[in-house]
Length: 207
Image (tube, rainbow, N blue to C red; front, side, top):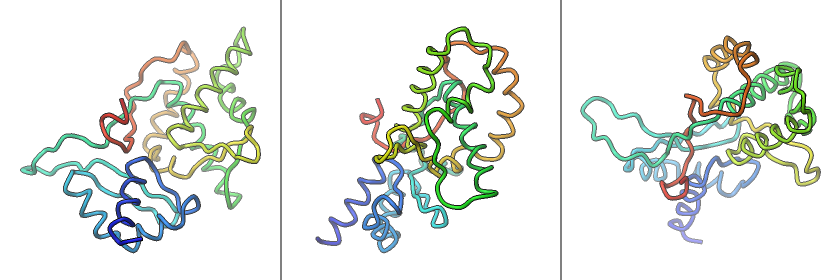
């Protein structure tokens, strides 16, 4: 395989979403060997390549132009999250933080454990089956955004991917902690929230 094809495969993988060292070691190795060329490629279209070697993942982030720089159309789009999905991500981030203080390795939760995390804030439901279905839909949404990974050996188990730490930072955690009580009091059908996430891909791919 030629060097150009190697670089092309890595570029395409990044445009499709987050890449993980454990999922594709060849792509990860190529990213490091050709990092300069790959970063230069994305820099020309206003995109930064973020690499976290400690956690073993890489993703694309829109470059914020400095004063005087040409503002390019966004390749990496901000995707609005529903209030309920935003809450689930914060709860998963909090659970991962607790896990990392006492354990090493991967945090794997069952569907029921994730439902329990979520239901703590909304215990007074009159239709448990409906709420369970709601959380299952949120789990699928989180998996599509690559914050969760369904285990092939056990479809009822989900790995919380560490990329969630890059998107749900300490400031976001604090903000949501202050609003959790409000969420519990005003719980209703999911509605668009002001929070957003950057997702790699072209305009057409994300429509």
